Each structure stands twice: as C-alpha cells, then as structure tokens.
Length: 230
Length: 235
Ligand SMILES: [Fe+3]
Image 1 (cartoon, rainbow over the protein chains, first blue to last red):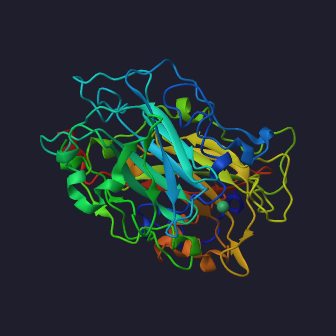
Image 2 (cartoon, each protein chain N blue to C red):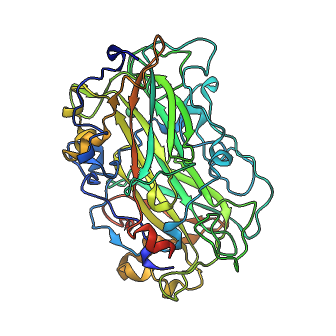
C-alpha cells in the first residue's frame, strides 16, 4: 500500500479517543422505532400471534422484522399482563416501548448466567418480550406466571417480571418491576422492601374481571411508578 | 447470588432522565429519585444466545433489501462491542434503524416533507462475532427537522439497540457523524454532558473505506461491565 492510500485525517475527539473510553451514553428510542424493533409475536411469549408489533405504522414491503416461531408450549400458568403508560399530565403515551424479562414457571432464567442445575429450564420459554403501546397507551403481553427466584443472601424473591420502559422523551431506559397482588412472598420481598410503603402499589398488578393482570406505568407526577437505579 | 457479580452503575457520561431543553422529557421522566436496588439474578441475567430466535436472522446490508439501490452515500459502519474492562462482548445483537438519505423515516407518523426512498427501509440487525466485532452497510442518513422548538434539526444519526449479556446492560443509543455542526446544538445529543458526548461520534477511517464502493466509519460500543475483576469472579 502506498503512503497515499493509508493517509487518514487527523483524529479528533470522538468515539475512538482513548481518554474518553467508557460506557456508551444512552439516547432516546425516538418516536419511529416501530419498523426497527417490536416484532410480530414479540409480546406473546407463549404462542404464535402478532402481538407486540404495529405494522399498520409502515408499508408492508418494509416489514423486515421477525415473526416469532415458538418451539412448543411452555410449562406453567398462561397469563396476560397489560396496563396504560401515562405521562405527567395523565395523558396516554402512544409511542412507548415496553420490554419484559422474567423467569419460567419453575423460577429459572433462560440465561447462561443462571447456572442452577436444581431448577429446571424450559426449552420452550425464553422469558424476553417486547411490546409497543397502542394509541390508547396500553401495552399487553401474554406470558407464563413466573416462579420465585433467589434474592440477596438466603432470601427468596416474590414472583416478579422485570420491565423496561423506552419512548420518545425517555433519554434512559426506565427500569421497574411487576409483582402480583396475590404473589407469594410479597411481604418479604427484598426489592419491594426497599420501596417506601406508600409507593409499593405502583409495582403490584391487580387482577381484572377478565382474568388479566393490570399495571399502569405512570412516568411522572401523581402516582408515579417506582423506577430503579440498578 | 453474590454482590460481586453486579454490573456497574451509570458512569459520568450518562444523560439525566429530565433534560428540559428536550421538551418531551419533562412529562416523561420521573420526578422522584430512583430507588437503588441490589442486582439480583433477575438483573444479572438476560436473553443471551437466542437473539435470532427472538429477532430474526441477520440483516447486515441495509442497501440490498429491495430491488434497486437506495439513493445516498453508501457507508460501512464497523467496530467492537466491549465492556468497561475492554473485554469483547461476543454474539450479542445490535438492532439498527434510521432515516433515509433525505432524513425521512418510512414510519407513517413521520410528516417531514422529504422524499421516501422505495429502495430503502432503514432497518437491520447484526450480531457480534467471537471477538465482539460487528459490521454493517447502509446509507448515510440525512438530518431532519423536528418539533422541539422553532428551527430544530436532528443531526444525522443511526439508532442502535443492544441487549448485552444481562437486563442490567440493556442500551439504546444513537450514533452521530464527525463534522456535523448540528450535534453541538441538538438537545438530545446535548443531554449527554461533554466530553462524553463525543463517545457518540463515530470516526471516519480510510482503512475501513472500500475503494470505489463505500466510505467507512469506526464506532465502538461500550456496555456496562461487572464491578468485580474477572479473576476474582472465576476463582
Ligand atoms: Fe431519529
């Protein structure tokens, strides 16, 4: 290679600057993520449906996302979880993206970092899902009710689903959890116990007449959801 | 579960949740302090190794998804996904989405009066190799106006989404281009304090550029690392 071919412009402060090395900062997902992220079936952790995607927001020939193809039916109690995402003025947030991460019915995560051989993995359950809110601000998932997983020390956590909120105007993922109002161990849960008592309700889903579990996510203001610093 | 397995907290480069210059943060960010919790098995695990089952097969070339070639400047973007100890993050998914060369998204709610490109969707995904390397081909996106304030323009950017190894390492970010004067006055980029904002700016690299084909840019993505040293963890 001649010298001419290998000349590079002078480096400037940027991503490659050794003095700046560190965590890549977070940025908003913006309002136009629907054709890039939430796939058909992304919100259905049990079966094969289109739940989770908003394909009506972009032309069909631009659909390059996945269609989930489950390998079988996961073990456990099938549940639906849903709720509204609301802003600080009480308005529905129609362009939020919600992700969930949870253990299977036996309380085991489908992750190499959960190496507990004594708890059975479920080959048909990943435990990760992604949904986008509708015009009414409602998110919805179909999943399996999770089992209990260990907490710090010898504690046992109550059944819960970890939840992430993204959206236009959300510069950093907001991390929270969904617990069940009838969950075994809620009163002794090591994470719920760190939440001021008067705010715990913001993390506890309640059962509706149709059997679904409902939890509103209030981003700001009255009734504000508890978000975590992990 | 021991505490030594925990991932790092945000470093000094993280933006605040509320940044009033970016107006929609005001009603969409918590007004109360975050509650600090210990990282449990829930936070240190994640859906690693099943990204193709979840998100679909790789789409590493955004310029060949339709019959014709998209308009605009063809570019290669490549780099590593690393943790804070500079260890590679192998086999991790990066999801990609962006506007076309005119700054227009195919999204139905994008009302910017710039042309759509029938040959460009602007969505893709890649997975890092065993050394944490990734590479994708696309079109350099254009700047676009938005409604934050009068005469507000977003600098050209590519949206990137990474899961990393754990719930705790989840990252959604944006890549910016060198020599873009809009970065300095963009409320979204400005939410990241200097000098850390420059972490979001890729570097032009003639060594990545392919003769008579595409310009090349280098961009490394650094995810939160484990607090403990690796040797102690494996002991
Ligand atoms: Fe954008």
